Structures are given as structure tokens and as C-alpha cells.
Amino acid sequence: MHPILVADLFPEIGRHLLDLLRALAPADWHRPTSSSGRTVKDVVSHLLDGSLRRLSLQRDGFSAGGPRPGEPLLAFLTRLNAEWETGTRRLSPRVLTDLVAWADPQLAGLFAALDPHGPALFPVAWAGEAESANWMDVARDYTEKWHHTRQLFDATGRPSTISGRRLMHPHRR
Image (tube, rainbow, N blue to C red; front, top):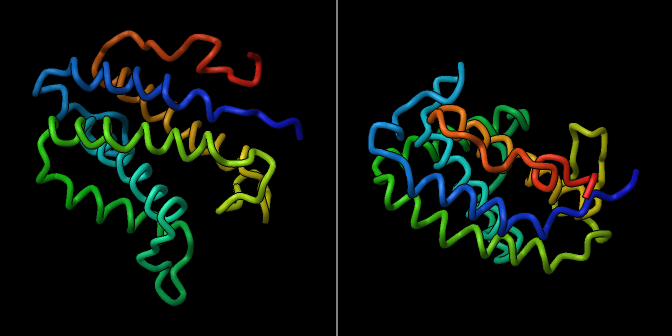
């Protein structure tokens, strides 16, 4: 498989996300994003969780533990997401935005420092891999960041600023 290197796109997509978040009206944070029942605020919280968890685990070597005995991976991830979103419901949109502004540049720095061909922290199982290179793991994170950021644009009725070739089709750069 030909590597798709996207670590350098994280600062750019992060700027688009922050520009959007800073432009939202208070009511926009409560808009639904899809049929999942998640609000804009829930999705922003989810994005923040991904950044903070990755920094804690991969950069800092801190793990709060894995799945419970017998808990399937999908159930574990669903539980982690739900626990985080419940806890961060107490945070204001401004606090969430400030935390995203703090965390995402650090995450971009982490990804930029990785050897793209080195072993990834996590395999990209949905791509059929038991072991993955960093470029594939970073591309998975990028795909999630792009997808959820686009959901936020759609949910708030704003024209997407991330749908150009560079950010939407990074393999064609």
C-alpha cells in the first residue's frame, strides 16, 4: 500500500476547526450532528478526548487501563467515549474550544515527530491490519478529525472550509 502522509495537515485542519468553533452561537452547540443523537458539543468533546488520550498514552506513556475482562474492543471504545462525553457536559463551549486550541497543536507536533514508517502504537484493524505503520495510524486519526469536523460544519449550516482537494483528498496532493 502506498503511504498517505497527512501529519502535516493536522495544523491546517485544526485551524479550520477552531475558526468554526469560535464562530458558533450558543444555540449552535446544542444542534444535533447526525442520527446518533450527539450534539455539536458532544462531537467537539469527542475530538478533544481523542487528542488528549493520544497525547497521554503515546507522548507521555500514561495508560488508565484497557478493556474490562471479556469486554470487546468496540464496547470498550464506546464506553470510553460515553464516559468522557458525560463528564465534559459540565464544560462550557469556551472551555472546550480553549482546550482544543491547547491540545491539537501538541497532537500535530507528536504526529510530525513520528517516523511515518515506524511501528504504530495501534494497528488499523478496520483496514485488516494486525500491525500498522505510523503513517496509517496517523491517517486514521486524520480521517476521524476530518469526518467529525465536517459533521460540525453540516450540523451548524455553515459552508465547509475543509472540502477542498488538499484536506479532503490528501492522497492526491
